[in-house]
Amino acid sequence: MQEISKLIELLTMEQKDQWTFIGTSEPIGSAHVFGGQVLAQGLYAMSSTVPEDRYCNSLHSYFILPGDLHQPIHFEVENIRDGGSFSTRRVLAKQQDKTIFLMSASFQGREDGYRHQIPMPQVPPPEELYSWDDMYRELKGFLPKNFEQFLAVERPVSFKPTIINNPMERKKLEPVQQVWFKVKGQFEQEPHLNRSILAYISDYNILTTALHPHADTAHFANTQVATIDHSMWFYGQAELSDWLLYSIDSPVTGGARGFTRGHIFNRSGQLVASVAQEGLIRPLNK
Image 1: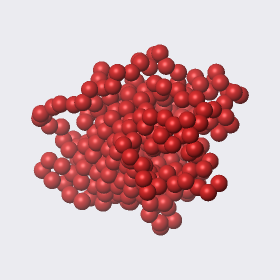
Image 2: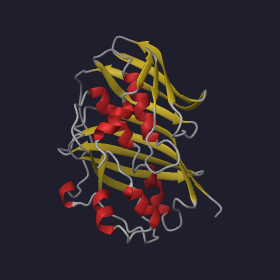
Image 3: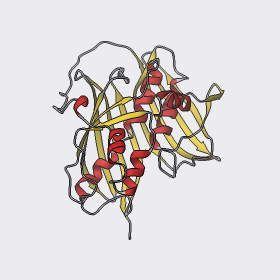
Image 4: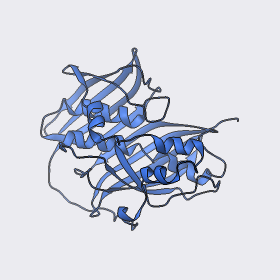
């Protein structure tokens, strides 16, 4: 079992100077760098340059080129502004002098104000559900090869979908997913690292939701799937060692793109973060 400590090593990169960080990559089954990894590394690099009492409240990013798993990634942070209440940073991620990713983020000190939120969906608790690891152990040898290979990858996060769709069936599905998750192992949940890990996890499960209504024909063998942009808003610190619910929906697809959004709730129903993502879902002629 891959523990969270390995992901933390990936995110706490070598710092070349005050504004430059050098990261490495870890494969998770794809031929390219996982988008959530470069997102989390970029956020951690920016977080390392802001005043100690300011934490990321929002980020907006674009994926420009696929990342090479075998090349280091250079993160170049730019200080846009340190204001009275907010700090703004931008980061470029580069490999061999080519920009593969860019992101801007806002950081704010803790303040009190008006509060309201949407309710958490009513779903089965995680104790009643199977995780991806459970499915692999119990169904190994009975699943489609590509799905079995996906489940076999060791990850620092445990995922428990509230509904398990049969990969053998080719039928249209509702454009929604509800997935419980938590990290494997314990760690000191310092706020900057906490948000970076949550950003990493937020890139799981979300874009595939846009394929659900087309699951009777679309699959990874005949569809090019890639993240175009990713935005995220943080409302507080999530307890990552306990189960959190990622509630995802896809309002629309078109133009070979899919739009998805998600809300992350803790077990008590508090909304801790929201996510929006657009991705490429281009049919291939196969």
